[in-house]
Image 1 (tube, one colour):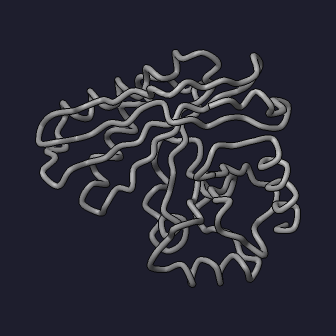
Image 2 (tube, rainbow, N blue to C red):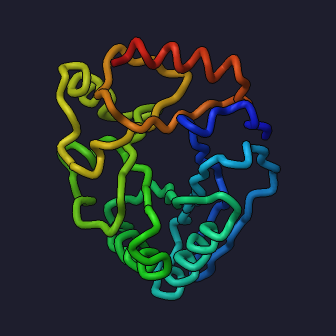
Image 3 (cartoon, rainbow, N blue to C red):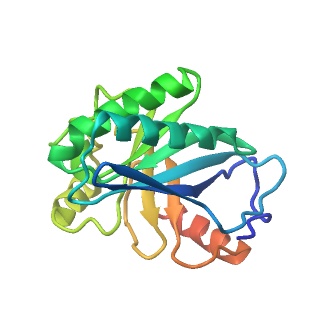
Length: 210
């Protein structure tokens, strides 16, 4: 993927650094294989996706192995922060909390930790406020059940209740918004390769949302 056209002064790159698959009591780490070209002074966020099978033990060994795998991504060139992408179910929340605590222990207090968040976690179902993270990014696309509630809430000028969700937003180029909270860091997802024209067109679109 060639992103050398971005302006590092106002644009960073969040890239999929790897995927962790939890199966039974095992941990399978799949690293990124696709090349990534960015400006030399670009700031990067390493994203690690976690996928847990139904039979995943979610035990202490898996917590330690997964945290270690995620922490290693901070050693990649130009990476300034890590982001964990895990749609944890209610029964997986204890595991996720323990994982993030272990990850914070690995990275220390200076490295920013971000997580993707279901929009519901940022409204009524706020279980994330005490997590050892710097931000939770509400994902505002492919929301499924509860979409109308979230759209209505934000369109009325209200903000997410969870403070961790009030600094950034996750949006897609395929889904348009008429109004979103301003002064937010935007994580923009595009299902096709980014080009300079695509980026400029999206930036023009964003200006109409605020």
